[in-house]
Length: 149
Image 1 (cartoon, rainbow, N blue to C red):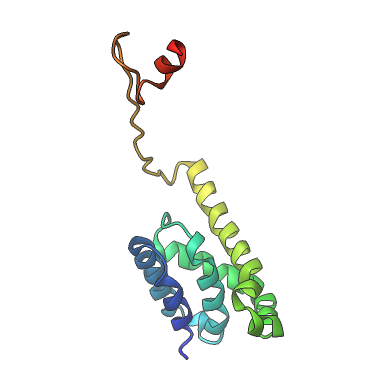
Image 2 (cartoon, one colour):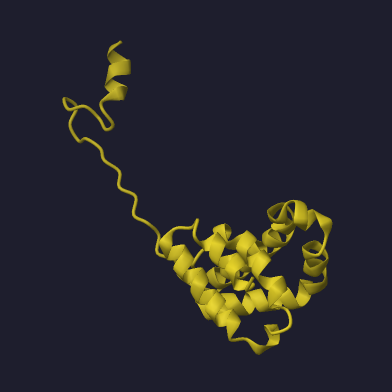
């Protein structure tokens, strides 16, 4: 099995936008020559973390964070990957490494937000109200019903 297929299987369960983002991250990773000998360690962790990775950073920057993470933790990841626990339940064996990868990416996002280098588009929240007493208040006049009863 090609190691990227592990990630591709995990992407099938994600929303299209997130799957496309992670596919671009993986494309960047596949072009990194430093991973030639270690890509087999990378994809199980990335697949385990895929659902929690938010498409906030540029894909190339996220890929760089993943490479840095792999460089720092390759021995531990290899130990988990080649353990009997991985054969029994691969997702559970990779979960601690996925959590660490997510934390690393989250820290980078928070640092950039704090510096003002990253601005997120917040969704608009619409609130409705009534300016008159004789019309029911939103939602459905529940407050008036309680006062009358």
